Image (cartoon, rainbow, N blue to C red):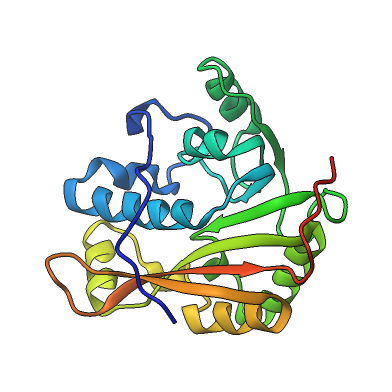
Length: 226
């Protein structure tokens, strides 16, 4: 297990400009000074693990806060999400000169061919699935990855401090977070080869980690296949 404090700067538009998501989307948290900083940093830690390539898929892209960064590392950006207005999000980025390929769908049955992506990114998605579903998720992720391709995921570490903070904001995370970071990591190790695990500490020198990023690869040699 590794730890790093380095992170890539997230190039967001003002949070209030994003469209196509419902009231439960975390974009609303980015406007709070301390909480917004934590939300950005967890995304930045995930972005820093991506190695670039031809195609990337982000599962659970939401409002698309990562897309500006992803376009600098990959030739094509794809997104899959079950709960957004795909047309609105696509139009929002097209108006700003970014072409993204977005679909509605679930990570448990993705509408893409085998060995299609260089990277798959999942930020704060896997904790919403049950522990017994995690293995099937990584099997499906491995299917759409090229041999040698990578998956980067981020999941929260359950801490009482964070539960209290979200409860103050009217959000009970216990009702939404069904899997722990250990459940996700265990399932990833069953299917993929671990590169490293990165952890993020809490604010104000809080000694316990509150977020975990996993970097894994599909076994095999990366091939430049169009």
